[in-house]
Length: 289
Ligand SMILES: C[S@@+](CC[C@H](N)C(=O)[O-])C[C@H]1O[C@@H](n2cnc3c(N)ncnc32)[C@H](O)[C@@H]1O
Image (cartoon, rainbow, N blue to C red; front, side, top):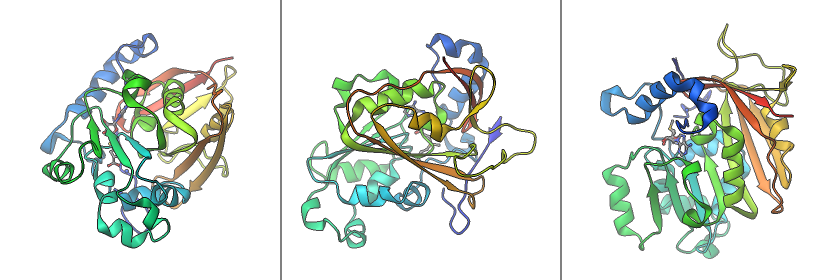
């Protein structure tokens, strides 16, 4: 099992499986190991399973536009953080410090957007409960016990901003289903910011970080030729995508910014062909014709 923690050069940037889908059954053993990671508590939490990244860590890992997009959210807007862990990034957003550091849009920001954190397992701390009690009802919500795919659009509503920092986008066994759900939840002109560690980047001829191992997330065509994750995202209809490779991170990461520009979204289907439990897991997908 791969245990991975990704770190920035200067600052440690503290770095889903599903059992029901037929395609996932061949990986039953690995998925069972993955479930143990989600269930782990206290000393049993693997080193590489980081659940407490700050908002600053999010800002460092994600595309530069994320910080501005978050600062420009209005009280009527909604932010979904998929794979929120303890929800530290959301807690950091609701601090006076955030406003001190984000002068642009300060007046319009008012009481801030509603933030929803989603995690398979409930990692809330007393700090979360205290913050929630100090804010207007439902200003921050934490959804646990289910994966993104298990919620309907009606249950979740729509969002102006969706983030995923080493959450479902890095952990899901079904990347195309996951992307379809994210885009379904986004408003038109809404933004999805995410990141993958150890992936074949669009801009560079980087090699897998670990000698003898494949990239952590790999996509191939039926003939075995490589499809970069960035190119696959760009092949989705109704989105604008930018990809930024960050080679100085260990392992290197690629940050993705996906803006939904119209409603006729169609995500090219990826069949899961490889899954090895880890933090995050090693995954292989095949592009359907
Ligand atoms: C390594 S933690 C990252 C937590 C947080 N983003 C951070 O950086 O501290 C992974 C998180 O993703 C969640 N997760 C994994 N797959 C998911 C899925 N399909 N839907 C929702 N949450 C998922 C886990 O439950 C966990 O909260």
